[in-house]
Image 1 (cartoon, rainbow, N blue to C red):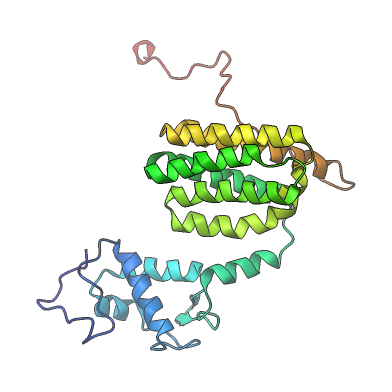
Image 2 (cartoon, rainbow, N blue to C red; image 1 turned 45 degrees about the vertical axis):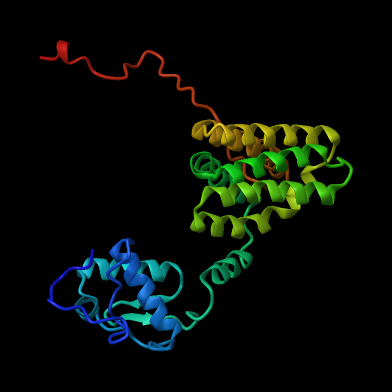
Length: 280
Protein backbone atom coordinates (compact mmCIF):
# COMPACT_ATOMS: atom_id res chain seq x y z
CA UNK A 1 0.00 0.00 0.00
CA UNK A 2 1.01 3.65 -0.48
CA UNK A 3 2.68 5.07 2.59
CA UNK A 4 0.46 7.45 4.59
CA UNK A 5 3.16 9.99 5.38
CA UNK A 6 0.64 12.83 5.14
CA UNK A 7 -2.86 13.09 6.63
CA UNK A 8 -4.63 14.02 3.41
CA UNK A 9 -4.15 12.56 -0.05
CA UNK A 10 -4.99 14.92 -2.90
CA UNK A 11 -7.35 13.52 -5.52
CA UNK A 12 -6.10 12.48 -8.94
CA UNK A 13 -7.98 15.45 -10.40
CA UNK A 14 -6.00 17.86 -8.20
CA UNK A 15 -2.58 16.30 -8.57
CA UNK A 16 -1.54 14.16 -11.55
CA UNK A 17 1.27 12.64 -9.46
CA UNK A 18 -1.10 11.08 -6.94
CA UNK A 19 -1.35 7.31 -6.99
CA UNK A 20 -4.77 5.63 -6.76
CA UNK A 21 -5.55 4.47 -3.23
CA UNK A 22 -7.94 1.73 -4.36
CA UNK A 23 -5.61 -0.30 -6.57
CA UNK A 24 -4.53 -3.76 -5.45
CA UNK A 25 -1.45 -3.66 -7.65
CA UNK A 26 2.03 -3.66 -6.09
CA UNK A 27 3.27 -0.13 -5.47
CA UNK A 28 6.08 -0.31 -8.10
CA UNK A 29 3.47 -1.27 -10.70
CA UNK A 30 1.32 1.71 -9.72
CA UNK A 31 4.32 4.01 -10.00
CA UNK A 32 5.16 2.62 -13.44
CA UNK A 33 1.56 2.97 -14.61
CA UNK A 34 1.30 6.59 -13.46
CA UNK A 35 4.63 7.67 -14.96
CA UNK A 36 3.63 6.00 -18.23
CA UNK A 37 0.31 7.89 -18.19
CA UNK A 38 2.14 11.19 -17.65
CA UNK A 39 4.53 10.42 -20.50
CA UNK A 40 1.74 9.50 -22.89
CA UNK A 41 -0.25 12.57 -21.87
CA UNK A 42 2.71 14.79 -22.72
CA UNK A 43 3.21 15.99 -19.16
CA UNK A 44 6.77 14.66 -19.44
CA UNK A 45 7.81 14.92 -23.13
CA UNK A 46 10.34 12.59 -24.78
CA UNK A 47 13.90 13.61 -23.91
CA UNK A 48 12.92 15.38 -20.67
CA UNK A 49 14.47 14.43 -17.38
CA UNK A 50 12.21 13.01 -14.70
CA UNK A 51 12.24 14.40 -11.17
CA UNK A 52 14.85 12.74 -8.97
CA UNK A 53 14.00 9.49 -7.23
CA UNK A 54 13.68 11.21 -3.82
CA UNK A 55 11.39 13.83 -5.36
CA UNK A 56 9.25 11.19 -7.05
CA UNK A 57 9.05 9.28 -3.78
CA UNK A 58 7.84 12.47 -2.08
CA UNK A 59 5.25 13.20 -4.77
CA UNK A 60 3.93 9.66 -4.91
CA UNK A 61 4.24 9.29 -1.13
CA UNK A 62 5.95 5.94 -1.41
CA UNK A 63 9.37 4.51 -0.59
CA UNK A 64 12.25 5.40 -2.90
CA UNK A 65 12.82 1.68 -3.57
CA UNK A 66 9.31 1.44 -5.02
CA UNK A 67 10.04 4.38 -7.31
CA UNK A 68 13.25 2.79 -8.53
CA UNK A 69 11.55 -0.58 -9.14
CA UNK A 70 8.75 1.13 -11.05
CA UNK A 71 11.19 3.04 -13.24
CA UNK A 72 13.16 -0.13 -13.91
CA UNK A 73 9.95 -1.72 -15.21
CA UNK A 74 9.54 1.19 -17.63
CA UNK A 75 13.21 0.96 -18.58
CA UNK A 76 12.68 -2.67 -19.63
CA UNK A 77 9.82 -1.48 -21.86
CA UNK A 78 11.94 1.23 -23.47
CA UNK A 79 9.86 4.06 -21.97
CA UNK A 80 12.60 5.60 -19.84
CA UNK A 81 16.38 5.35 -19.71
CA UNK A 82 18.91 6.16 -17.04
CA UNK A 83 22.10 8.18 -17.48
CA UNK A 84 24.70 7.64 -14.80
CA UNK A 85 25.14 10.77 -12.72
CA UNK A 86 22.28 12.59 -14.44
CA UNK A 87 19.16 10.62 -13.60
CA UNK A 88 16.14 9.23 -15.44
CA UNK A 89 15.03 10.52 -18.84
CA UNK A 90 12.01 9.83 -21.02
CA UNK A 91 13.15 7.81 -24.03
CA UNK A 92 12.78 9.39 -27.47
CA UNK A 93 10.78 6.31 -28.52
CA UNK A 94 8.55 6.30 -25.45
CA UNK A 95 5.40 7.15 -27.39
CA UNK A 96 5.57 3.83 -29.24
CA UNK A 97 4.03 0.64 -27.96
CA UNK A 98 6.47 -1.50 -25.94
CA UNK A 99 5.47 -4.65 -27.82
CA UNK A 100 6.09 -2.88 -31.14
CA UNK A 101 9.54 -1.81 -30.01
CA UNK A 102 10.42 -5.31 -28.85
CA UNK A 103 9.18 -6.87 -32.09
CA UNK A 104 11.31 -4.42 -34.05
CA UNK A 105 14.37 -5.27 -32.01
CA UNK A 106 13.78 -8.99 -32.48
CA UNK A 107 13.15 -8.64 -36.21
CA UNK A 108 16.41 -6.76 -36.62
CA UNK A 109 18.41 -9.72 -35.27
CA UNK A 110 19.03 -13.04 -36.96
CA UNK A 111 18.26 -15.44 -34.13
CA UNK A 112 19.17 -19.10 -34.46
CA UNK A 113 15.90 -21.00 -34.91
CA UNK A 114 17.00 -23.44 -32.20
CA UNK A 115 17.22 -20.61 -29.68
CA UNK A 116 13.75 -19.43 -30.65
CA UNK A 117 12.32 -22.93 -30.36
CA UNK A 118 13.83 -23.40 -26.90
CA UNK A 119 12.15 -20.20 -25.76
CA UNK A 120 8.89 -21.29 -27.33
CA UNK A 121 8.99 -24.59 -25.44
CA UNK A 122 9.49 -22.72 -22.16
CA UNK A 123 6.69 -20.22 -22.87
CA UNK A 124 4.10 -22.67 -24.09
CA UNK A 125 4.89 -25.28 -21.47
CA UNK A 126 4.23 -22.64 -18.82
CA UNK A 127 1.10 -21.47 -20.66
CA UNK A 128 -0.37 -24.97 -20.77
CA UNK A 129 0.22 -25.41 -17.05
CA UNK A 130 -1.44 -22.09 -16.31
CA UNK A 131 -4.35 -22.88 -18.62
CA UNK A 132 -4.97 -26.12 -16.72
CA UNK A 133 -5.46 -24.14 -13.52
CA UNK A 134 -7.07 -20.94 -14.86
CA UNK A 135 -9.08 -21.75 -17.98
CA UNK A 136 -12.83 -21.31 -17.72
CA UNK A 137 -15.14 -24.17 -18.62
CA UNK A 138 -15.85 -22.50 -21.94
CA UNK A 139 -12.15 -22.10 -22.72
CA UNK A 140 -11.49 -25.76 -21.92
CA UNK A 141 -14.32 -26.76 -24.24
CA UNK A 142 -12.98 -24.51 -27.00
CA UNK A 143 -9.47 -25.97 -26.72
CA UNK A 144 -10.89 -29.49 -27.00
CA UNK A 145 -13.02 -28.51 -30.02
CA UNK A 146 -10.01 -26.97 -31.73
CA UNK A 147 -8.02 -30.15 -31.21
CA UNK A 148 -10.81 -32.12 -32.92
CA UNK A 149 -10.91 -29.61 -35.80
CA UNK A 150 -7.16 -30.07 -36.13
CA UNK A 151 -7.61 -33.83 -36.39
CA UNK A 152 -10.21 -33.41 -39.16
CA UNK A 153 -8.12 -30.99 -41.24
CA UNK A 154 -6.97 -32.23 -44.65
CA UNK A 155 -3.32 -33.33 -44.17
CA UNK A 156 -2.55 -32.22 -47.73
CA UNK A 157 -3.68 -28.62 -47.11
CA UNK A 158 -0.63 -27.02 -45.49
CA UNK A 159 -2.27 -23.60 -45.16
CA UNK A 160 -5.27 -25.07 -43.34
CA UNK A 161 -2.98 -27.15 -41.13
CA UNK A 162 -0.97 -24.09 -40.15
CA UNK A 163 -4.13 -22.10 -39.41
CA UNK A 164 -5.55 -24.91 -37.24
CA UNK A 165 -2.23 -25.27 -35.44
CA UNK A 166 -1.96 -21.55 -34.73
CA UNK A 167 -5.56 -21.35 -33.53
CA UNK A 168 -5.09 -24.23 -31.10
CA UNK A 169 -1.87 -22.88 -29.62
CA UNK A 170 -3.32 -19.37 -29.48
CA UNK A 171 -6.32 -20.65 -27.51
CA UNK A 172 -4.00 -22.26 -24.94
CA UNK A 173 -2.03 -19.02 -24.60
CA UNK A 174 -5.26 -17.04 -24.13
CA UNK A 175 -6.51 -19.48 -21.50
CA UNK A 176 -3.28 -19.04 -19.51
CA UNK A 177 -4.57 -15.62 -18.46
CA UNK A 178 -1.16 -13.93 -18.47
CA UNK A 179 -0.96 -10.84 -20.69
CA UNK A 180 2.83 -10.57 -20.52
CA UNK A 181 3.28 -14.20 -21.52
CA UNK A 182 0.82 -13.61 -24.36
CA UNK A 183 2.82 -10.60 -25.57
CA UNK A 184 6.05 -12.62 -25.52
CA UNK A 185 4.35 -15.44 -27.44
CA UNK A 186 3.18 -12.99 -30.10
CA UNK A 187 6.77 -11.84 -30.53
CA UNK A 188 8.15 -15.36 -30.85
CA UNK A 189 5.62 -16.97 -33.19
CA UNK A 190 6.47 -14.92 -36.33
CA UNK A 191 10.07 -16.12 -36.01
CA UNK A 192 9.02 -19.78 -36.30
CA UNK A 193 6.17 -19.41 -38.82
CA UNK A 194 8.16 -20.80 -41.75
CA UNK A 195 9.37 -23.78 -39.75
CA UNK A 196 5.86 -24.49 -38.51
CA UNK A 197 4.49 -24.56 -42.03
CA UNK A 198 7.31 -26.73 -43.36
CA UNK A 199 6.90 -29.16 -40.49
CA UNK A 200 3.63 -30.52 -41.93
CA UNK A 201 5.35 -32.70 -44.49
CA UNK A 202 3.16 -35.80 -44.36
CA UNK A 203 -0.06 -37.31 -43.09
CA UNK A 204 1.99 -39.08 -40.42
CA UNK A 205 3.32 -35.77 -39.06
CA UNK A 206 -0.19 -34.31 -39.08
CA UNK A 207 -1.63 -37.31 -37.22
CA UNK A 208 1.10 -37.14 -34.58
CA UNK A 209 0.59 -33.41 -34.08
CA UNK A 210 -3.18 -33.82 -33.84
CA UNK A 211 -2.78 -36.58 -31.26
CA UNK A 212 -0.44 -34.36 -29.24
CA UNK A 213 -3.00 -31.55 -29.35
CA UNK A 214 -5.68 -33.91 -28.08
CA UNK A 215 -3.44 -34.97 -25.20
CA UNK A 216 -2.81 -31.33 -24.28
CA UNK A 217 -6.55 -30.56 -24.45
CA UNK A 218 -7.42 -33.53 -22.26
CA UNK A 219 -4.85 -32.56 -19.61
CA UNK A 220 -6.15 -28.99 -19.56
CA UNK A 221 -9.73 -30.26 -19.35
CA UNK A 222 -8.69 -32.47 -16.40
CA UNK A 223 -7.06 -29.39 -14.82
CA UNK A 224 -3.82 -31.34 -14.51
CA UNK A 225 -1.16 -28.63 -14.44
CA UNK A 226 1.88 -30.92 -14.62
CA UNK A 227 0.27 -33.16 -17.22
CA UNK A 228 -0.60 -30.19 -19.45
CA UNK A 229 2.88 -28.71 -19.11
CA UNK A 230 4.58 -32.00 -20.00
CA UNK A 231 2.18 -32.73 -22.87
CA UNK A 232 2.84 -29.32 -24.44
CA UNK A 233 6.59 -29.50 -23.90
CA UNK A 234 6.77 -33.00 -25.35
CA UNK A 235 4.74 -31.91 -28.37
CA UNK A 236 7.04 -28.99 -29.14
CA UNK A 237 10.18 -31.01 -28.51
CA UNK A 238 9.32 -33.15 -31.52
CA UNK A 239 9.47 -30.12 -33.81
CA UNK A 240 12.49 -28.71 -31.98
CA UNK A 241 14.44 -31.95 -32.39
CA UNK A 242 13.84 -31.94 -36.13
CA UNK A 243 14.88 -28.30 -36.38
CA UNK A 244 18.00 -28.84 -34.27
CA UNK A 245 19.11 -31.87 -36.26
CA UNK A 246 18.56 -30.10 -39.57
CA UNK A 247 20.45 -27.03 -38.38
CA UNK A 248 23.22 -29.16 -36.88
CA UNK A 249 23.81 -30.79 -40.25
CA UNK A 250 24.49 -27.43 -41.92
CA UNK A 251 28.15 -26.61 -42.74
CA UNK A 252 29.83 -24.58 -40.02
CA UNK A 253 27.07 -25.21 -37.50
CA UNK A 254 27.98 -25.74 -33.87
CA UNK A 255 27.26 -29.09 -32.26
CA UNK A 256 25.38 -27.96 -29.19
CA UNK A 257 23.58 -30.79 -27.38
CA UNK A 258 19.86 -31.03 -28.13
CA UNK A 259 17.62 -30.36 -25.13
CA UNK A 260 15.38 -33.19 -23.98
CA UNK A 261 12.53 -33.78 -21.58
CA UNK A 262 13.05 -36.18 -18.71
CA UNK A 263 12.27 -36.17 -15.00
CA UNK A 264 14.59 -39.11 -14.30
CA UNK A 265 17.74 -38.41 -12.28
CA UNK A 266 20.50 -41.02 -12.03
CA UNK A 267 22.13 -40.39 -8.67
CA UNK A 268 24.29 -43.53 -8.82
CA UNK A 269 25.89 -44.33 -5.49
CA UNK A 270 25.97 -40.74 -4.29
CA UNK A 271 23.86 -40.21 -1.16
CA UNK A 272 21.06 -37.66 -1.52
CA UNK A 273 21.55 -36.45 2.04
CA UNK A 274 23.87 -36.91 4.96
CA UNK A 275 22.71 -39.07 7.85
CA UNK A 276 23.03 -36.87 10.95
CA UNK A 277 22.98 -39.92 13.21
CA UNK A 278 26.47 -40.91 12.07
CA UNK A 279 27.97 -37.45 12.37
CA UNK A 280 30.74 -36.74 14.93
